Amino acid sequence: MVEVILIENEKNYIVATVQSWNVDAFYQHVRNWPGKWTLISNEQELSERKIKNIKPRYIFFPHWSWRVPDEILQISECVCFHMTNLPYGRGGSPLQNLIVRGHDSTYISALKMVSDLDSGPIYLKKPLKLIGNAQEIYKNSAEIICQMIENIVSEEPEAKPQKGKPLYFTRRTPQESLLPISLSIREIYDYIRMLDADNYPRAFIEYGDMKIEFFNASIESEESISAKVEIKLKKNSEIEKK
Image (cartoon, rainbow, N blue to C red; front, side, top):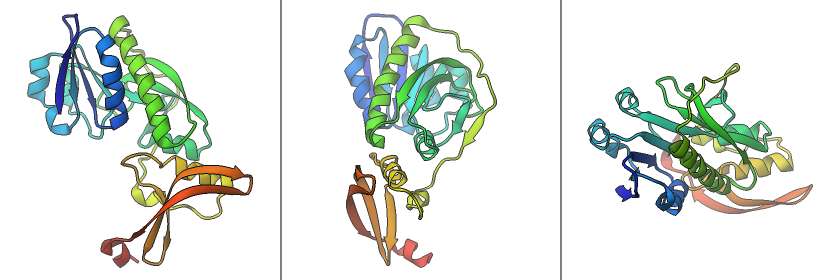
C-alpha cells in the first residue's frame, strides 16, 4: 500500500514500515507534519525507481523487515530507529535481547542508515520504558518515533558518529521462544511478555505432539503468574524433527 498525504511544504518524505502500531501512529500524527508524505508498507513498493521519482528529503524506517539496498541509501537520506542505546545492542531482536538481559528501560536511537547494519551516525535518542508486554512497548515506541520524526524534519540535525565499543545482539529464531527450564517466576513472566505482540512467535512449551503457547501474562504473587494459553497440534515437520 502506498498513500500520499500533502501538507503545506515543498519537501517530500517517506515513511516505510510494516507493523500496525507504526502505521496507526503515522496516521495519527502525519496531518500535523509539514511536507508531502508517502507511506510504504511492503518491500516491492520500496523501489529505486519510485524513490528517484519522489525525491524525498528523508526516508524514515520505524520498523522494516528487509535490508535496504545500497542504491536507495545513496539516493536519499535514510533514517532508521533502533531500540537500544547504540552502539550497545546492534543487531536483531533488540527488545527481546534487552529484556532477557534484565533491562527495564532503554533508548530509541535514530540513526542514518549505512551499509553496515546499525553502525551509522546518530541524529538523536529518546528514552523508552520496557513496561508491559511487547505489543504495548511497541505502541509506546511508535509514539516516541513519531516525535523523533517531527524533530528531524523540523530541525534537520547533523548525525554524529557513534561513540563507544559496540555490543552485538543476535536475531532470535522462533524455536528460541521455547521456555527454558529453571527460570524464576519473574523470568517466566518476562519471557512471555517480551514475545507477546502481533506477528511474533509466542513463548511456548511442548507436550507430546502439542505446542502450548502463552500470552497476556501477569504476576499474581512472588510464587505465581497467570497467563492465557493456546494449545496447538505441532506441524508434521516439527514432529518429524524429534
